[in-house]
Amino acid sequence: SKIDQAAAKAADLRSQVQELGAALAKLMKEQAEMDSLRAATHEDFVKAKADLELGLNGVRKALGVLRDYYGGGATLVQDAASFSALMQQPAAPEKHAAASGAGSSILGLLEV
Image 1 (cartoon, one colour):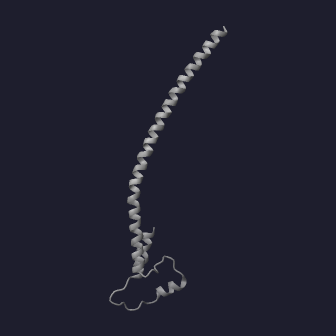
Image 2: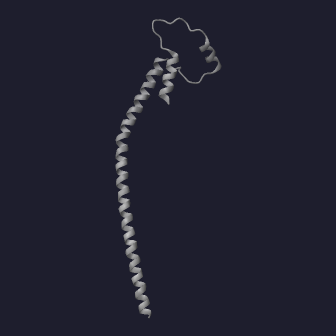
Image 3: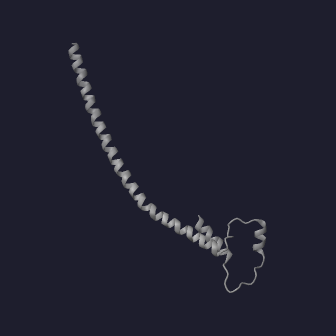
């Protein structure tokens, strides 16, 4: 009777080992698929990163050029003194001068 109980227990344990082995194999397969997907998405990111950095550098250069062109004083924050100065009638333009209103809007748009 003890031998029968031990044999039944051994058979039950063998069955559990087989089930756990199958579950482990399934997990290993899923992990390999996830690793493969992660490698593919990382490769896509590395390719896109260079393009994104190039675009960001272009925007930064454009901001620098526009700041230089518009005098570097183009800010979106206005205090009372600068607002009063803006509300006064401007002097007659020379042949060509940078438009201050357009500069702040362009810079504000690019800085977003």
